[in-house]
Structures are given as C-alpha cells and as structure tokens.
Image 1 (spheres, one colour):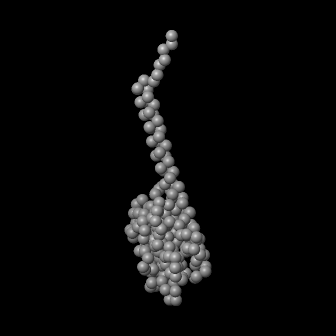
Image 2 (cartoon, rainbow, N blue to C red):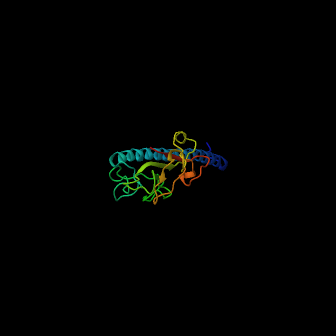
Image 3 (cartoon, rainbow, N blue to C red):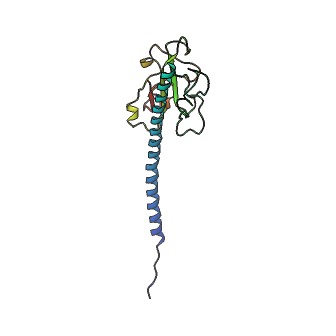
Length: 190
C-alpha cells in the first residue's frame, strides 16, 4: 500500500517566502514605471500648454497673465475653452486649478517689459511655465530651459503680479526662487 505524502511546513514557508520576494521586486519596478509615466504626461502637458500659448499670442499679441483663468479678456482670460478644452494639471492632482499656486498645478508666470501687464502700455510678452518632475535622472531635465526667476531670459522684464510668484527653473518642485540640486523642475519659455 502506497502512503500519501503532503508538503511539510518548512516547504510551504519557503515557497511563500519566494513568492513574497518576487512580489516585492515586481511592485518596486512598477512604482518606477508609474512615476516615469506621470513625468511623460507632465512633459506632454507642458508642450500642449506651450502650443496653446502660441495660439493665444497669435490671436491677441500677448500672453495671458493666468493660464487657468476662465473669464475676462486678454490678458486676463486663460487658455480654456478657446485654446484648450481644459487646461491640464498635474496627474496627481485631485482638485481643479484656478491659478498656478496650487501644489499640483503647473507653474506659470507672465512677464512684461514694465509694470503690471496692462493691455495698452505693457502687455505680457514672455512666459515661464514649469512642472515638478518625480524622476530627476531623465533626459527631459537636461533639455529644458532652467531659467532663473530673475535675469537671464527675463532680464529687463517684470513679472506680472497677482497670480503667482516667479519660480526658478532649477528650484525643487518648481517652488521658490533659489536653485536646488537635483533639478526637478521641467520648465520652458517661448
């Protein structure tokens, strides 16, 4: 008569441990893929915003003061719904953006040759737009503008007031006016 044999407790624990290690490896690699995917979305959003800003400038001869604004006339109106159905926001955002000051809203600042960005005497003629990236080792951060909040491409220009303070293109999460290492701000100008 043949005796039936089952698995021992040790064999079961070894198999469970191996499955746990493999599951951990898979989860770690998936979390990296998710952050890379969100960063790719941020880059695409910034490019869409730039295209809409070009169309806005072509139609109005100036850039908007706030890309998220939904009312008024140039430069007080934003990009939606005329130039974009909805102005994109960070993939991790759960709330709507009304200006660039929110944690998960794309940073945007308009600049004019002098003053507070008025249609007649000082229309916004330059902009700075940025997104906070999760991955700092990607090639996108090597090919962005890295504009400081003063001087450089903004020399002789004044930031439009009332919507968002200037940000440094090297600042952590595109917040603040001082450069940081590593650079996590993907920023662009016209």
